[in-house]
Image: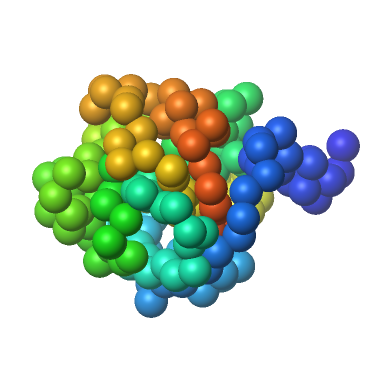
Length: 185
């Protein structure tokens, strides 16, 4: 199968319930653009990588939003299940932005009550992009979910997949920003 066909066939939202769209923007990266070195993974040994979570701002969430969650997911990782880079739950509805670096080891930029779940590297923090050399461009879906509950009710050690499953019945809206990264062969 042609690489482009493979990439476009892997839509992470294809089987999820419909949800209203709202807007997420970032001072860190424009939708469709490549991550800067700061959002690449130094933990994984990418030269210049710093594992700094992007700045995010969102607006236009649906009425009835009581909390938010944020995830960063790479469906193009050669794992059969993609790779979760970051997951944050229980962001209060009064919060509409996260500063760059909020996803550090301590979650220092997260609002009170919000918490990070372990990503696929099993670290409760943001881990940057690290596509395998020569694997082609990867997409990184940064998604803000507007939820109809104050707390999504997942434990702090849950996986991002469990968060997604638990959110599916509570998602009022989704705001999506897609960044890319590629490591030359």
